[in-house]
Length: 129
Image (cartoon, rainbow, N blue to C red; front, side, top):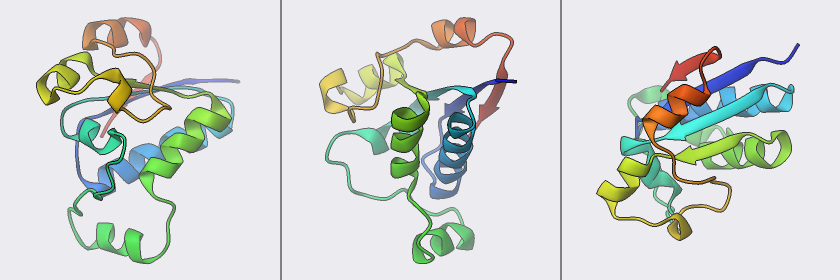
């Protein structure tokens, strides 16, 4: 039975982006419909050429980087490529950050408003990181 998993990423911390990417990639790999909405502090880590890692909230975030856990950008990319997860940038955050669609990583879909995202995800499981 396929579920609908919808994730809102607003945090720019390593741990939260890592957990969101793990949920997205596992759900997509197991056949669930996955949509991830990136806004606020999370969106800045998905601009083409962005190599800066998100800051760790605590010791666990530092351990993730040291132990060779696949990075969150790679897991989101795999979710989109292998599991057809939709990765959607927040149109308001794009306006505030003054970035265009071309400046985002290629796995991202079209800019989307929060109202549209919430309307399209009604009835599914919603997680916020």
